Image (cartoon, rainbow, N blue to C red):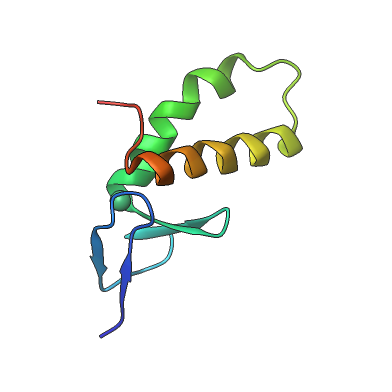
Amino acid sequence: MKTLTCDVCKGIISAPVSGRTYFHLAHRELCEPCHDKLSMQIRPVVRTKIPFTYDWYDHYVQESIEKAVQKGKFDVK
Ligand SMILES: [Zn+2]
């Protein structure tokens, strides 16, 4: 069976199902817990961003993921 490795926590994603058990974002693979943490981390910023554009959003998501990849985690508890 195909397995994937989460780019952030390096956890093994067994039986990967796109959009359910893993998420492909900004050319990275994220496991579900890391995807949840990404959402939690960016939500307060996204919510208050004015003006909101999808270009900005895509860039912000990508930047947040790259930082987390370097650290091995997201900055949320
Ligand atoms: Zn992960």
